[in-house]
Length: 557
Image (cartoon, rainbow, N blue to C red; front, side, top):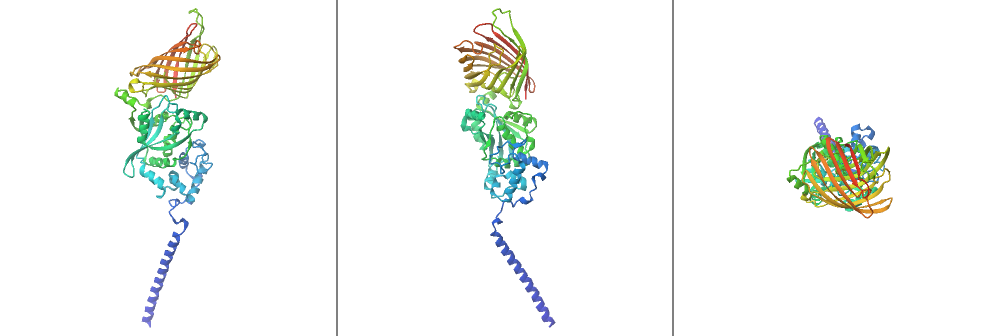
């Protein structure tokens, strides 16, 4: 019996063990099979990091909140991206970063495939890259490498309103994940099909829609260097691997979104600044600028030690200059904002007695928000150009302060015939008064012309002709302006400009003069400071010539 009892007890123990094991295996198979039928069983966006675990926005440390605001392109209390852009997931996202954070977390909880379009935000919340089935992002990562990152400055076209201050973009270069060496250009711009003047019209009406664009860099080299005869300066940036990864994610997020473009508040330079700042806060631009220009931001990167190498793809014109031994660096140029002031003396009157002079002494103040000026000793550029927007000149004479001149737009270039620039164009819209009278009446004037020049390094003669039209107190009028002169440039002596104009009209003088002779000199004293003077002599149809002398300091900021 004892033997039988032991045998039965052993059999019962093995039977119970096998029964429990079988039931466990069956239960596991049933549960696994059932789970495959559940709607949420497929790999989801929430799988990499639970949205329920995402902290509240206000619980994030300050540096994380700052990064989130940079990813949304915040500057001050609002984003520079317009509120109606589909870049935002929340209707209030453009002015409330917390609302946009909550909308993003909610989308993550809903496991929406839409978050495939926001890899930087996804990484910000989960700490991981978007899942493998986000095909669009994976294809982008496979093709676009960010091994090296450059800020690229395209030199200006003085005759084009939208290109007169140059263009700034980013170039990403490296060997992509497919093993192919490549480089892509990334920039913010308005559609080019409208043309310069169409874009200028939209600028005044405030209706420009811009986009962040990703293009093969070879195409951009052809467009700028070959077609438009503009050099590309490539400034390699010292980004860390982490910053390059953030940049790669964020660039993908910006595609296909229509964002308001503005020459003054949100242009190509500020767009580049924003995507670089999303990668690293140290790329934030200067805070004391009225508005950011392409060259100014490139100079800011240089001053802060963020540029490690400099390369150049010269245009046809600049290639000819390099063969002549003429080198330059745009980073050495003056800043774009100009204010000048100083002493002013003018001889006024029409007395036939030359000794009976009537002179007035006073002062002047001239402000130009964005400028390259024919008169200035400007380093770092081989071109002699003028790009003036909203130049305002105040004068104090005869115990009166009055507005003498307002230039809305003045664009021009003295070409170098030997480099293939046979002709340069000039265009100006101004409001100005008669220099013979002390009054504040300003009359509109429009001019359009062409010119040619011969650059010889130091000595640069030129000749030009332009048509002018104006509306004055005497009614509408027109004139032909025949101009000739020379610009003399020297590294130590500065810039000297000599010019003579003759006005052919059907009604006597043109704004109080039949012809004029001008001489100006400017020299850089220290960085951002020039000294200069200007003398002019206006010859009138009747009466004694009018002389004017001014001298003072010029500050670029």
